[in-house]
Length: 343
Image (tube, rainbow, N blue to C red):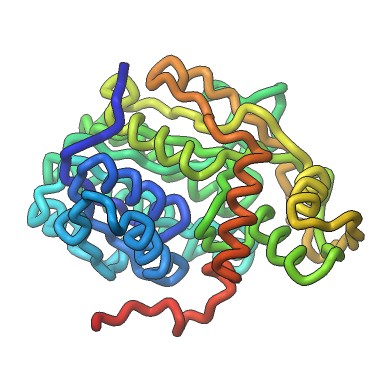
């Protein structure tokens, strides 16, 4: 049975982001030495401060286990960083991830998501890194053509973001075969939980329902497969430690899908709304929107015994509770509030 990564030196690009910070927390708990590389444009130092606070009082010596570097994936000397920190494993999450932004900034999305991946993979090859986990997306599949999407499902990206992620995947596949770069491609279906850095559907619903019982939404018939973030992090830390996953794409998800309308009513009930009013705003509809995504995680189960442990109901309750305790999402803060300053 494959275990989670432990007692290794690990780099997490995008480690101040939503999923990245949760992986960082998991790695620290497992005894790894972690270096975070983030430009702090969408990721937040507050996310890392939160995980330190959550681990405070434990037997973990956090100061000796985490090193935070503010740097740009496209400009940093990645090879020097990997060698100087004696990095064994790399989780590559740094990306332009928010689909609505790709319509206005397609060149930036391609530059970061494709060229950024190329730079980190080549640097890892030069630095003799043991293994790289490339964080990809279920968006590369497009709308599900089968009941659940496995890794043999066609790829049919329906946004510039999805095209850039598929290009990143193909780079990884090709470099694995051409140069024997040890890379695993994790195709994550939608993820939710504390510390979200963009207004995806769950944090958007919670933020709107915190103020009233009226919701402004787009395509409420679209459905998504939603994984609680700790399940995603646990799967990632096991997958990177699986030699049989090298050169493979592996899905991680929940195994069931829910419409936006269903999610709205579930969230409203958790936030004590007896009834809600949904206003459909056509400006919120995406061009070529993916109508349905549902994960078949059979391959992950075979490779790493993956199984989601947090139900949607429980995960939503945890997420609502976190929001009520903190009062806002990272994406609701100003950039000035997010900037890192040493004191």
